[in-house]
Length: 158
Figure 1 (cartoon, helix red, strand yellow):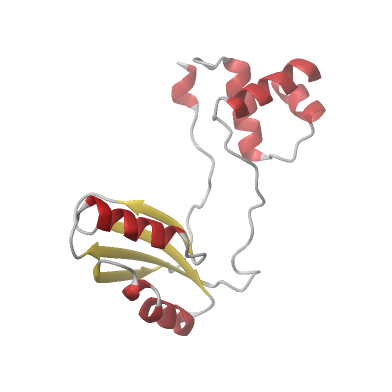
Figure 2: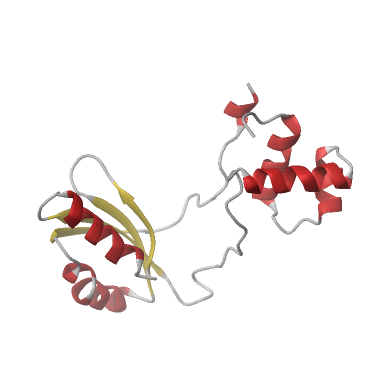
């Protein structure tokens, strides 16, 4: 699947909004019959455009009221040390997002915790003890303005 047409883009857009649509509902929304719609969804999955389906949970309802942005600086930036750090970070459930970044710092993490005290213990006991960590800088979310996982697709239709 090299190019996406208007139906593929419509399918991706609709599924980003509501991945629980039945195939019949999805087909109706994008202007296809059920069988071609189903084939297109499978082709989009097989081609890797759709990586999976999941439920979006309310972090407050599950008791995770703190969202921290943590920049970790590496002691040394060699391939093996960076991979060891990446592998260790990837195994930590409280880290909900991690990016290898440019500029100052090595990794930017999003970390959730119950409260400030539990974040503090987590930072001291887990984050500062990761392999190759030199320094840590933390900022806390004071309120969420936008947190959509939906990607813009308008550039693909041109």
